[in-house]
Length: 167
Image (tube, rainbow, N blue to C red):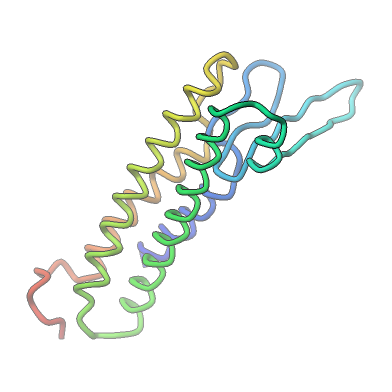
């Protein structure tokens, strides 16, 4: 069950654009899928969203291209890790079969996703350092999901060693 919750949290963190949040009176943020900036003027709120492909088309140079490639890699890895966590969760709920290999891969996937998240945020912070952006809720949800996913994968195994058959 923990693995399923972690998968949902991982996907929520992956597809929301609040890994870094805008400073001051602006709203919006940066995420794996792109950039969103919102402003309120004369009582009306206007938001502009751009995915990384649109941002790189603006000719911002090699730094933004590196951010785009890193984000795409993190996005693919996040979806794969969430998929492994779903498999572990479903197998734990519906089967008494041994899940040794799957739990090992899902635990490693969650740990790798956490490493990727940290690397991605470092990349974001370097690129957006002049904007004074702070960590947003998406990053925290994502990190919590990675930790919960690793724990959930181990708990789904029943706390037994990986070499013992389940049953």
